[in-house]
Image (cartoon, rainbow, N blue to C red; front, top):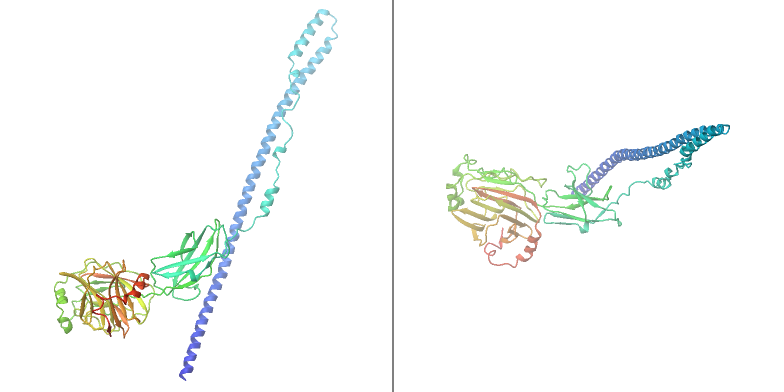
Length: 508
């Protein structure tokens, strides 16, 4: 019966996943159909605009050429009209002189005939008819203004749609996810020397497989990429996956998108659990700050015996003062279910706050930065069973490194009420590496990746990130992958001796 139920549950899960996959594909098809309609309408409008622009240019050229012909016609006509007018005047004067000369032949008186002959001779000498050029100043030839648009017609007949670059192909094997950076590599299916640049788009998602049309996140764009790979660095991995797609662009148009690729970007994301933190701590998602006014309502008689013996912490309480303003809050995306409201609030001198997400397996990394004037703080991990009066490192259920900047400066590793002084400088940021399955908790200088201290312990329960702060504040950075430098150091750490030995090899 039980095996049949389990088999049926698997079938139901498989069917539900398949239905979800089909529904996502239906959404994709509907979105694509809508895109075809919208894009076709836009392209038709652009085509009309382009042809209207061509028509406008042709009309302008035609008008200019018509004006040139008319101007040439007017110039030649004016020249010929002027020449024609001169010839008509010359002909009229010449005919009058011819008539006068003909009449002079009939003069009988020698003296009058001689006078008339002299006049005719003088007039002939001055006559315009003998000074005229009898060649037209301009010809009637207009062939220099003729046109032959055969080549242009051939060009117009070759008009076609722009050559669109083919879709690139993202190579998942060449893509790299490491150190909160993602390198995406792609190639063109065939050589195209017209490619000017590429556009990379990406978005975070919690869904594996093809991108979802109704995914709640928008695509982010990186434009003008000249090569065939690009690295996104400094990412916060606050989602399980990231989708990537790329398109090629020439000088005129962008091509189709590549087939999308989904890469896994898992990392530990957690906030601080305000529901169980000490009342003297003001807690936001990834920030905690000492607040001496917050615990006035606590019953001081509820302090545990293990805290009465703590001279150091007791003296801290006697000299408490208000902290500095809270650090800037860090935004956090989706993360595993929180562990809230499931334990008592820390009280007494245990100024502690835990993370809201338990670590049950795997390797994880996060970083902590203290305010400059923070007097005392601890960073580490603890079992959920850590008592409400317990201080980090003073029980066998918690491991931490502790920084004290009050009265005297100390830096030490703590577990099970044992202390190991650390002969290294306190870094600006502390990196915490937890290898649950390997039973290792290591602390690093987050900037240089220098190892500060390493615990070895067989964790028998899920652990929670733990923090103690007094007179100051801490800010966290989560959603981080284990840095490559830390992974490399972990391979060699088992051979280390000295400062890591006194609190190591503890099984809990």
